[in-house]
Length: 293
Image 1: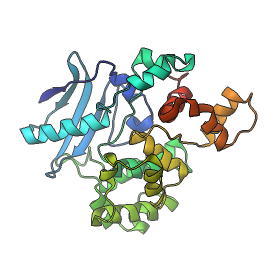
Image 2: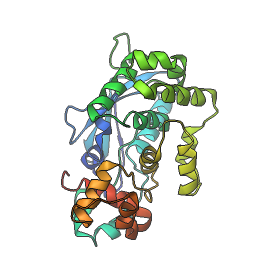
Image 3: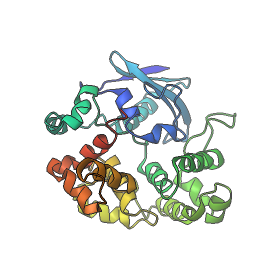
């Protein structure tokens, strides 16, 4: 079964895929990471669907071997619109980018949209699993969660969807630590899953929350396991681009770009990009990856 989604004029699927490393984390998969990707998703009715997304003349084309009802197709289209940032108007950002040579590639390549997971729960778990570890460690931990607790598409054990909050809540912290090898992150993931499963924490409501960024940051920081860097990363994924995910790499970028390699502080990082206003997080994100794109 195939269907297409319309996209904004400035949209580039390869640019979204390459916006960061999420496409390398299960249940994403990409044999051609510059142009297309596959994903396994659990729909609201419990069906698990594997599908592929690739560029098409009319936008993007979605292909799945599963026959979908109109309701299921609408749900999948809605999720993909979120995953691909299709709702985002980037012209205000492009106005800044056109004036900054270091960001010229953003407009030329249709960059500015950041790949997301269908749910903020998945993005939050993955973000927690990026802390204090190598990228290889993050990939291993995410794959373990999917393999151990995700639901398969059919009778074959693979591929699997990202586990639901209920599935991870049913696994105690010890299992997450010893079987999924999450280390010190296990109790954080366990508590997050329990809170979401019980309905104590409505993460998905943050997608449309009209809270000021500062207030939303406080809400995210109240989640155990989410520190300043993780909160800033989640804010970026939520489209709050006035926050910069400051880590050792951000310090290195600002040191080299603006301070001749001298040591800098988080305040220096903010100061370097504050002229971009509400788009400063986006300016940093694509400035820091400019040479790689």
